[in-house]
Image 1 (cartoon, rainbow, N blue to C red):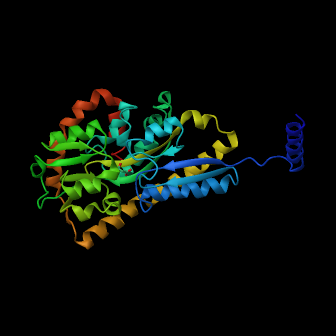
Image 2: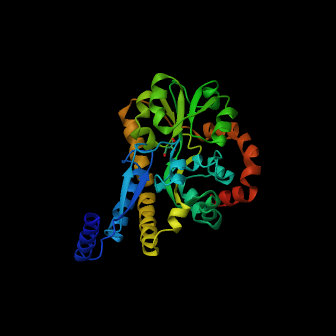
Image 3: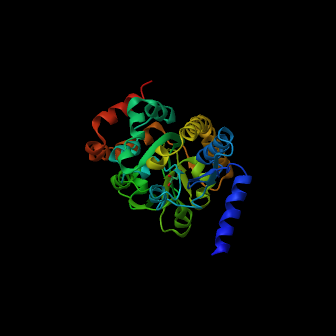
Length: 330
Ligand code: LMR
């Protein structure tokens, strides 16, 4: 009887003597699926540096690249379960949560990343950041990667008829599925981490991606031809768990918001440069042939993919499509 009492007394006394307890930092896990040496990889590292500098001792940010912690199939669920606090999936991977974000996958919607940027900064674009709050997801920022190119394991890749009957890996997006069906090809939804092997073993013949992803994942080593279709965009939304975010101490939320804004400016500032750098590396490396398409070639791809727009206009909303189109005309 006496012993436990004594132990309690000793514990209480030592707690008093050691002064106020130093709170442990909040551990923030940031998981993503690409390599460090990409626009998203660098922006995530920058966010960690800035957040820890602005909130010394209060937060510790751990970045997990390359699907190390969670891949495409799990990361959104993991965020909602609280197993990770930040993820930045491509805008193609949210269609289970809101149909509106399918907008970004419409082929040949945006002329270039500058147009994507203008749309994202507009009221319509900013509105999409909170469109999934009811489902527990809060968007904090858009991060750029770049325009998509098409690649295959065939020698010829110039016109839509060259991909008829070929199998393509796609991100988990119904719009992208319709896009390849419109071309008479066979799309297959697949996690990013599985693409290299699928290309290497011939499970699929081709894929679509940005130069920085094609380079950092070495897709160019297992593809014969890459055509500069620029037919769509791969960009990201950095999302957090809305409930977790709202429950943070106000000063932490403010510091993280500032770090996110600065990391976004940094990452979006380097994205074009990274893709251009990797395009050159691939073209000069000579492992895959890079085919620069003419205006007429591009027009043929655009025409072949056109039916996709009608199919998704109802779900996305004509107003949103018009707002996106307006961003092209600056
Ligand atoms: C893909 O799955 O191809 C891309 O979304 C990967 C990424 O995050 O850039």
